[in-house]
Image 1 (cartoon, helix red, strand yellow):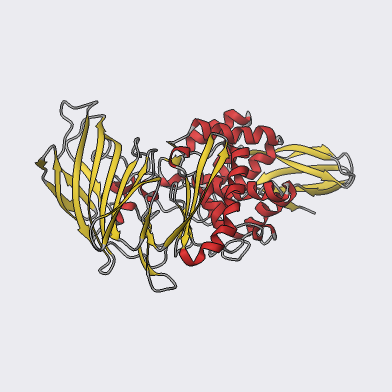
Image 2: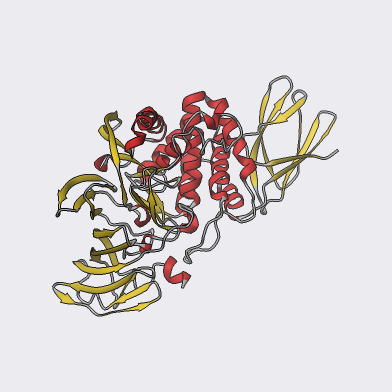
Length: 517
């Protein structure tokens, strides 16, 4: 079953997503949804059946195409629809799926996926969604694979009680009264979007808005907060602009100018919902008031605002083809926390921040494991991924070149999906360094390289241990006289004469050091 979820098999590989129209009526009192999802797609190959994901207890009740009822059958979370591509390669086709049910309720969002049917502090309905990992098919039928996003975006219609506000991705096109008790909202996303990023938020919201003059011109920036948190939202709002200024200057323009930037207060901690960032940090500094790095610098800014917004570049614009490569999302985005610390407090502070995060790394599982099976990536994709990127930056020893490389990555893979192999090859090309053994060691193995060294008189001998065969990586030695010396070490011992008294190794390279007496 995992291979059906995680692979691009015969039920998926012959059709390419073009557009979703999602039309949902909410029944908040009974925690139910009913709706119609229209899927426009392009036929790109030969196929005889279409697979759609929709998880229990949600049920598909009817499928139509071209005005005709289309037969379908259920196999667990998979729904097999009698569509084929005979004689249609290159053509645009569509299906319309009617469905309903009581979607899974998230017991611990965002880590446990599902619908969040909450009440705010005044006892009013407060609804949200969080489904990364578990999948958007928890609450609407879709093609649940990251490598295929709807090229032309999504139209989102929601019907809800008229005294509440529905906030979703993209731009609000209309809100119209349906009857005495209901209102209908229409949001539009014009850019490709991951399924798990599609969001529905319902509550007593107030909007804070401003135009940000960014790298690509005027950008609509909004922050939707519960009405009684309006003052707190206005106090936090300027940090959104600081974040945008920092990231645009270091890694390039915000990737979704067409759909605007939006942050939405939620009852759960946060999620990187594209052009509708979920924010639940309760207006505290750090990560719910904590500094994950224990450096002190993590309490100078709002973690959820910075981290989840960073995903707009890495995760939302640049998406891993397989979730087994999720280090691309989380490693780079976690490193953007270091970049933001540097924007605020300087490079030395940023180094202390990323080094401080290493205490969280467990090294129990490799960052990359098995493809095509919906593999649940380990938590180390965050902090170990960030330390890998910082190690590469340190080895490059040229910040201008490093940030140019990040900007080129954001340009090359803009609004597209990429595998780790492809990204690794591109970074090797851009850096002009042999990073292949470094990627292999840090991504696909758990052992952290240990530099074993001896000092006899003024001669040092060193070699890497706990590494793959033929591993090579430079290290930076600092003498008591302040001299810095780069040494390319391998798994074979090498000796050299010290130019001064040895003092320490540069900590910015993520490894361990062992002096052999």
